[in-house]
Length: 482
Image (cartoon, rainbow, N blue to C red; front, top):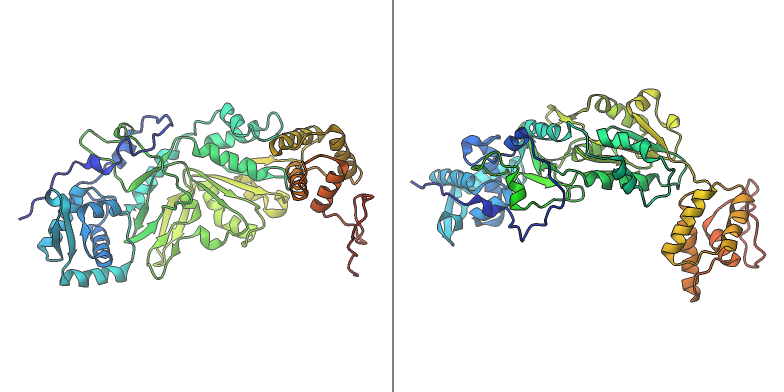
């Protein structure tokens, strides 16, 4: 009878030379977290039915032909001793066969399907085509997320000020958003367009992602179904050295479960493309497994809904979908079988809009979004500061007379509201026009007029231009008849 092998499992994690050194200072993990991360090394220790693991192994061999023990470990993220136990049993049942033995001992064995195994593999493919990390049960996923989100994030006022330092904002602006970041509650950013709401939200996302990383499983299972959680666009891995890894071991004899990845806190950003389907489990009828909804991927991090009110779904639909999760921090998802599962709803939700909030949602929804932060248009002092910063960044000599000309002709006379985005956009046009003509960029009245005429589109009811016309001759468009 075959005996399972003893394998130095530390080899499965990258060496210190291969790993990107984690520069964050990792806090000592909770004992409950370390126990959740204990890797099973025997089939009796598996937290899911062993049939789920067997199905993945059979599908791998059906797809690839010959598969080595080490490759099984790389794909399934299970310990090699556990996989060896399972493969020995499949050998005894004449489901798999050893086709080659390279290297030392069973570690170098490669397996393929027998005739009986091929039939079982077809049955496994009929159930699902999922091949990847073995899922963890949804109950463990819930425990893992709650353990890592139960306290406040270690975000100080200095951290918030540093995160927003590249933006020109009111002096105490950080006090308006800091409390929401610290406790991970919801936030509503609103105000006129072009004044930095998206930049602020993205700065918040970078700040959150730079705090303590979290453990997230690559996939979860419920009712025998697999739900893929990992998304390379959302999860950025933090590689651990072996010394870092030891702090997460339940004891000196255990290993860390590689079905979990160690990631920066995730950020999910959506705009007008958001649909209701993206907020529910998405079943692939061909591959026959589920993809996690966006809010599940954002757990432990931040979910930004940009341009709120311009989505393919109405604000009232989103209100009805999220009014309970925002209150209870629990979301309910439904499988195709009709089974409902409860998952944590633990992320910072940020709504960003240039529409008056009360025109979008009712008081019940606004009450559940605890922090409302208005991002207003800049005054002349702030506008001047922003203009000077972008002039320096874009290599345009800042000319006082040219700037005053811009203010008088293109803002004061037409009573145009200033937007924080205007300096960047106008100066980029000045630079582009100068590059086209092969001359250095200058803030001359002609250059400013040309850039502003290209940038602003202003008309009054009869179709005439709202802003003063320049004295330069050139073609003018005739308004279309009404």
